Length: 140
Image (tube, rainbow, N blue to C red; front, side, top):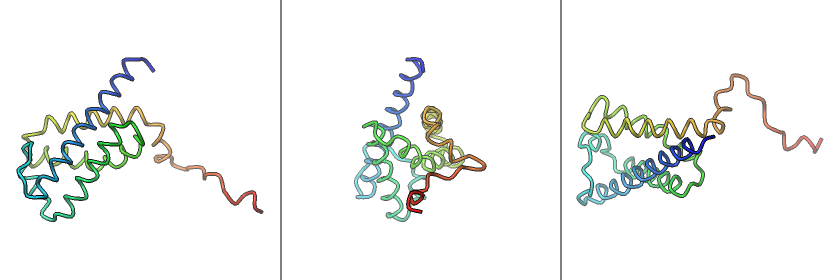
């Protein structure tokens, strides 16, 4: 892989990590009734009327932000962020277009990271996957 592609992957990873880390921390400000340090979408917050759902999502965002920032368990972070990124795009596409550009940038950065780590996920879309090694095979 060329150095420019690897550099671009690192930029995408850092961009996603910073966005999700800040968004997750900002969400906790909302949960605790404090004024968020970055403006939030009122339409998005209306969807989180149950604080437990907001706590769960913001905790996942912080966890994934830390994993991406530390360059650890990247495929796990990508898998966890998949529905979150999809929801962000759909929310800003249909309900609140004010942050649509950021949502599109998130999807593009996420797509680049997913493409870079595609070998970690290719077995998920095999039509007839081969079973893994049987740990009890030597016991027979």
